[in-house]
Image 1 (cartoon, rainbow, N blue to C red):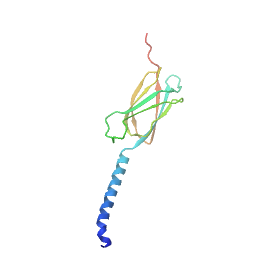
Image 2 (image 1 turned 180 degrees about the vertical axis):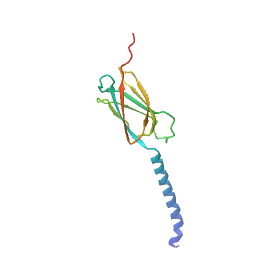
Image 3 (image 1 turned 135 degrees about the vertical axis):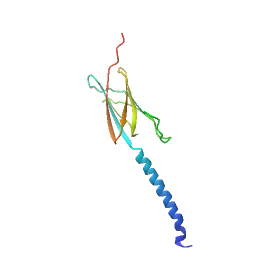
Image 4 (image 1 turned 90 degrees about the vertical axis):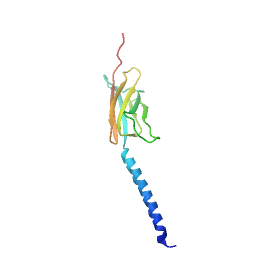
Length: 128
């Protein structure tokens, strides 16, 4: 057996490995991620709101891998700040719920490596 006899099998294997690597790189590039930071404060005073629950959910159905999450939930610290793990770019609904405050809910477009969302909560309406 000569060295050339094993060459076609090697080339085929190399081609399959390279194709797989290129496909994986294309998927990674197509799913750019954003590090989202949120600052929650009182609209009137600018004071941080501690313990606010922040929910983030994609606006539309996304075709992500089964192991990818579609929604996230975090709480603010004493400085009114919260950080989400890296999230795929896209349009998301951000909801903030805090005791003693009006619930906030708006759509935001996430793009770029890092994004800061500054959310100002309003006091609830008074019922008579």
